Length: 540
Image (cartoon, rainbow, N blue to C red; front, top):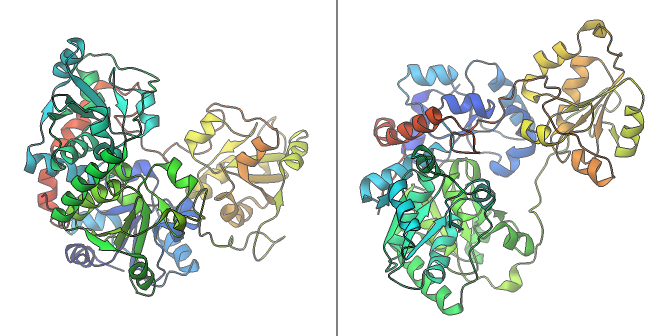
């Protein structure tokens, strides 16, 4: 057992530690410690080796009394982690010992963004003020700092998609006239504050302001958002890149960003310390060519989601780009968030030898069923499953995300959370399977989006159900590739949809009360930081 005081001391001293909350995302978002990283019990085998790459990292596991943490600790130990302990008393023990707790997700970054505005008085305009400028056809450009898919869902009319880390690289090309007013927006506050302050820190000559409260503020002001916008940033000239690189390097140096080269990076691999190697370019650039051993983490989202990309607090972070801008700007923020961060210099295009997604370091599935006592559980191909489904007796269990299940699933599949198998599968398949007119189930087939998660659940499903369990090779993606179809809808949900916290700023139908409550919560984060006292944040 590890007590609150031990975790808090490690965080204050910036020692390496991973505080893992293994609940699903929605209960996690309701209440958790500042630096708790959410990693649901159902995805441990698929995510752990990537997100916590060093097996002797001190890992403290917590829940809120649901009984998930002891199971997670056992699974982590089976995966090879050697310093795993439980947080004494879980969430309630943390609170009882005086620990500060926070709502929502990506809280370290959001709290830091509020601190930046508090310290630097980041300039902003209200939604009615920005709307008036647009209607007056003022010399104005609106840059949306979110991911492109978020921008497409809803955006400020006339806005252009320029995800956060791209801003300093692209802004001069989009506003070459120094008299052009640049407005930066996101859905709420954090990315617009960080994006605006990035341009200010980099010394662009333009007037630069954030859209206060983002698309939430726009909506609360009764103004219409655009849907399906397609405007993206454009390429930059070599002269523009060089100027942006000089600006970004100056900001990075001021923030205390350190430098690394290939030899130094190779030496770090021998150290007993976690080093995250992250490529902050766009996902498309990463897929086209990247350095071996690096993962894709586009810079704006990295700064927004540090708890996901780097859940080991006190770890070292190395960033790469090929332009001298995006890594330096992203690193400048991470350094202010109390990370030891380095920018990798001296890399040539010839060294970008890998293409496609970075390989996932996945363990072999744990022992699965009596038919396969050690190693991979029995598997089936899409054609075989289609034949089985043509007759009664086969039930497909989808262990992917509920959002993807609703978008499309194997016909007749039931969605179920792996973390709730013990109760929900028993309810789905009661003893004797006496389910009225429904046919008896003689075989269970597990699937998920790509087949990464479902094999690890086979043993538990077999033990609970007492039925033969098979895994769909390649999951739903392979099913589609084989010419089969998926059906949409919330048709058969065996578990509550708690795997995803509905952000008050996403989508187009969030209640106004929820949006306002979200803003009010963000306004209080600076005070919460002062009470927590474990963050080490500083603002240049």
